Every structure is written in structure tokens, then in C-alpha cells.
Amino acid sequence: MSKKLTKRSEDYSKWYNEIVSMAELAEVSAVRGCMVIKPYGYAIWEKIQKELDKKFKQTGHENAYFPLFVPKRLFEAEEKNAEGFAKECAVVTHYRLKNDPKKNGKLIVDEESKLEEELIVRPTSEAIIWNTYKNWIQSYRDLPIKINQWANVVRWEMRTRLFLRTTEFLWQEGHTAHSNEDEAIEETKLINNLYKSFVEDFMSISVITGTKSESEKFAGAEETYCIEALMQDGKALQAGTSHFLGQNFAKAFDVRFSKDDGSLDYVWATSWGVSTRLMGALIMSHGDDQGLVLPPKLSPYQIIIVPVFKSPDDLVLINQYLENLKQQFNKLGIDYKIDERDNVSPGKKFNEYELKGVPIRLCVGLRDIEKKTIELFRRDEMKKLIIPIHEASMQIEKLLFDIQENLLKKSKIFLKNNTKIANNYDEFKSMIEDGGFVLAHWDGTDHTEQKIKKETKATIRCIDDTFSDEGICIISGKKSKQLVYFAKAY
Image 1 (cartoon, rainbow, N blue to C red):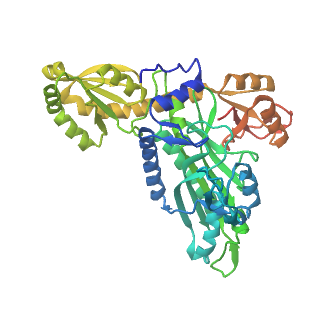
Image 2: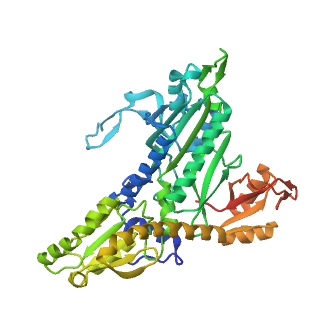
């Protein structure tokens, strides 16, 4: 913890990587492109998982688990999906190793163990799940099916960065089956709104919502709904997606059902997911030059208590002094931790927990006992104050709520201040270079979209259907139905 954190303004990428390492969130593993999520980082992911899981179950979804391996023939069944993920697939071709005949202690592939059919390590699970649904669905009475799974997936990325883009990552993926189109579309929108409320209410990150363009939507989807966040360096981050799959996967796997009138029809589908990429969003949305800044609802512990003591007897006195406060924390459901290490100075502990982004730090010494006070430090504003011990639990409960709201307020202001409207292509290029979301008219063609991407590296992040103002495309001069969000993105 002695190393000083690089300032965001000096090198944003380095600052990000140092926070991930120094705050003990994750580290690079021995496997290229993969990460080890450390206990502190995983505790945050567990809180994300817990809250989302609760929301899924409240909306009628159930958890299940499907195989990691997908037979190649199943993966190929839905052509657009297979084509979209083909370049990122890891493929299992053999099932056994044997000793090298040179007897040098090394293992080599046993060619006799070659699989009759190669297996894809799942980059996403639509194929294996829809092959399973074929066995589960015969009648309209079997619908809807609303399944979610918490899993790992593998996408063989060439350029990786911890949490943002790794070869293996953790996520949840929902897969639902419906008897009609309207119900499936309603489900897709429901989940996208659920993601929005979670990211804003628990992560304190303001987002925009809408749909993806044809080139940016999920491979195999009819429509992709999304939530997009804006990071402090002005780049967009796709925080969650929800896909209306139409009947594409049902047709690929011949999943049909008998309707109430006796006729047969293909099932309507959705899929949706968020991943450990949300951890990256958390870091880059709230972090500062001192380190991570965590919203109280997702912090592994909301309060760190640092006792200042010189002897074991001092520590006993301090713990006795805090006993009533700890009981009140337990009643209020406030997570706290006491750092009683005697081989680390209070100053180093302060720096450590500022770097880890713990929302509130309490410091207690013998002088505080004499004065019946406690020293409180608020991480989001880097402010220190002294409060009476008998008022501490009530003030801290309110303060945790205020910190959560304050982070969201800052995020909303940042998003608003960094969203601009471009009236022509020269303005657009200048705004994109400065960073942030740029609203511009687009004629709806892939040609124009790709030209903008090639010349500016900006992509259409979101099409907000609530914008209905017609205009002129900044590139082609043709009529445009609405403004769309552009940005450079992770």
C-alpha cells in the first residue's frame, strides 16, 4: 500500500489498472487474458449478484445451470449467432493427455483421444439452452419459461483488461421462452429497465437506455435493448443488454408448441445479461485520485473502524466503548469491520481504506472515550468530523443514504454535462475527440455508420426511441428520423 496511485489526469488507463491491483480487487492470472478475482473484489461481485438475483426472482425468474460445453453442431444451428461468436471461440478437440515418449516429464496430447465431435467452450448459452427447451416445451401450457443462470463464459479476446474485457468472465444470462411476440418484447424491455434501476439505485451510476443499431446488436437477435454508462474519461461502457430474439432460435432448434386452438407455432425468445464488467464501471464512474469510491449498498463493508491503541488493555477499553454502537449497527443491518492489526499504523490503515473506497471510516482512541465522541471520515467528500458517540448510529445511517444519493447526483450531472448535440460533421468530430456522448442525426444506413466509425472510432451506443425530432444526417445530408447517441467506447 506504500506505492502512490497515479493521478487520473496523468494516465487514466494506468490509474485504472493500479486501483484494480492496489485496492486488491483482482490480479492477472497465469492464464493469458484471465483474472483472479480477489476476496475484496469478489465480495463486491457477490453483492451485485445478490441484489440482481433478488430482482430476477421477484419478476418470476428461476435459476438453473447448463453445461459449459456446447457441441459444435448445436453451436452452428443458429447461423448469425455462430458467425458472430466464431472468432472468439475456444474449442475442445481432445479429452486426454499422455506422457511424452521422450520421457522428459512433459505431457502431450493423446491423438487417440480426439473427440468425434468438437466442443465449444460457451461464449454464450443460447444454443445449449434452446436445444434443452425443445424437450421442455410441447404446449402453450408449458410457457412462459423464465430461466436465469449464474455462470462463467469464455471469449478468446486478443486485448484484455481486468474486469472490462477478459478471456473468461463471470456473468448472469437469462433465457426466456414465450407463446407470443408481445409477451417476449415486454420481457425484453422489463429486464432492460430492471438493469437500469439496479445500476442507478445500487451502483449510483446514471445511464441512458434504448436500442442498438443493426451492426451493434447481439448476433441472432431481432432487437437489442441496452443501458450505456459514461466513464470519467469520456468513453462509453455498455453496462447491460437485453435481446428480443424473435423466433430465430426456436426455428434453428425446431422448438414448437401447440396453441390453445390446436395449431403449431414457433416459440418466441429473449436473452439478457450483465457481467463482471460492472466492476469496471464502478471503478471508472466514482474513483478519484485517492482510489476507489464505493456506494454503500455495494461496499463489502460500509464502515471501517480503526481503533488507535498502544496496548492490549487500550484495545479492550475501546471495544467496550464501541459495544453499544456495534449492537446498533447490527440492528440496522449496517456492515462494519474493525481493524485491530497491531503491526500497521493508523495512518497506513487510513490510506488503505481510502484506496479501497470504504464509505465511512470511524477512528476511536482513548481521548475519544474521555470526550464521549468518535471521529468520522466520509470517503466520497474526503471530509472529517467529530460526533457524539450517542448520536453516531443515527447520523451514520442517514449519512450512508446521503453518500449513495450524492454519488448518483454527481453521476447524473457528469452525464448531462458531457452529452452534446452536433449539428454538422465538423462539430461532431471535434466533440467526439473531446469525449462524452454526442447526439447527432443519422440517416439509418450501415454505410454512414461505418464511415463514422472508421474516421472517428465512434460507434452508435444507443438509439433512444423517445427522440422523435427529424433532421438531416451529419454525413449524407439525407433525412434523419431522430438523434442517436455516439461515443468512443470500451
